[in-house]
Image (cartoon, rainbow, N blue to C red):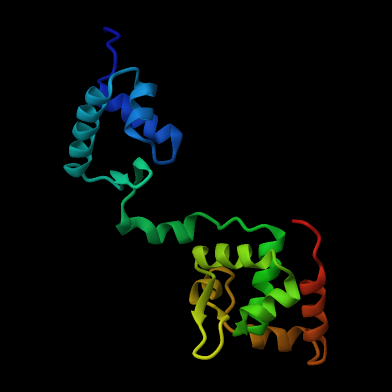
Length: 184
């Protein structure tokens, strides 16, 4: 058995897999130890290979560079198999939105502080919160999404709250969540 060097397209596939993020053609060429034109040709060969095989992965060109990624038809698996990683601050902000849904963003900022702006953006990107411009006013209306209910396995938040707390206590719990501003 002979030890032959892998073809360049296979080497580039390994580079894209190991980096796990979009890479420019120049960076790919540097890692592969070849020129840009050679890397470009090998990358086109690799893209053609993926286009003709029955694979869950594909090589795509993004504004940030080339990337090995999951085909869009498999993105729903991400929601079920890859848990969203939320920090304590984002979880607390999500709890306030869930308990007060819908809530005006300025009211949320009053309760949670200015760090909630970034947390809301993260929650919107993850699909847990929907952000809509109000018909009147400059702020946004925030509400939880179906993904929130599915991910946290919560069918009816108000029903759960009523079962676990007397009616006078949810406001006190919300104050505890909203005012705990420890940096997390």
